[in-house]
Image (cartoon, rainbow, N blue to C red; front, side):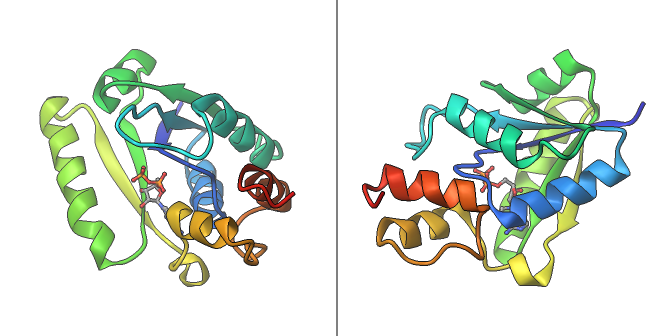
Amino acid sequence: MKAAIYPGSFDPVTFGHLDIIKRASSIFDELTVSVLNNTHKTSLFSVEERVKILEEATKDMPNVKVDSFSGLLIDYARKKNVHVAIRGLRAITDFEYELQIAQTNSKLSGGELDTMFLTTRLEYAYLSSSGVKEIAEFHGDISQCVPDFVAKLMYERYGHA
Ligand code: ADP
């Protein structure tokens, strides 16, 4: 069985992430979208909330599982016996950062963990969770960025409900 992990913050999941999830899940037999519990980053939604949001957003994709992890991706992947990590690439600015992480993971895992990049569809290239949060904070229109139920949760969190 071909399996992959798509790790990230997903705070919250956007249409850009969902496009990568849909495409990766058609390439692999099983895709685990896993929320990184990063204690150095302040987040809008807790890890548990982000997992729930992802579960709801991917409920029609039967081979997509949602999970969370802390610590190193290579340790988590090894535990799950998965050898491919998925990452999305938007622009050249993502490239340098992503390349460094991919090479670090490859080195640290002794070549056990490969990273596969999917390039974003052009209509989502501008999308980032942080950008969407900035718009939502000021009650702007985020209907093109995230599913409706996510927009509602974000407005609630920013006191616009
Ligand atoms: P990070 O994991 O760096 O904290 P995110 O959770 O926002 O960031 O993103 C997880 C992965 O999804 C990263 O590989 C990121 O480049 C990718 N990604 C984010 N937004 C988009 C988008 N609009 N289109 C395609 N890929 C994206």
